[in-house]
Image (cartoon, rainbow, N blue to C red; front, side):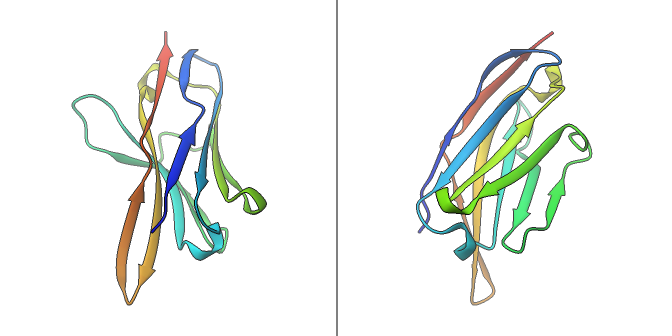
Length: 119
């Protein structure tokens, strides 16, 4: 089991920045991958950024060059720094932890945090 607690959402003007935090209940090195997903009204949840336990990262094309995922292992926390925000970044952002055990993926989710970007 992994419990995730997110923080850092809010309202920001276009061009502004926010940093989201996701604190895990256990060592992030025991988690195969942690990432951020988002879901806008009427749309499917989509991957924003992902960091594997080895440190490799993936980003959605729409956020490359603007968002950066990072981690602090001492705090068991993963961050996403979001710069040059656009109104289309408005969504509920969810932290995800994926644990792979016996070739089965176990996904854990945070409660979600709202990010609203005004034009």
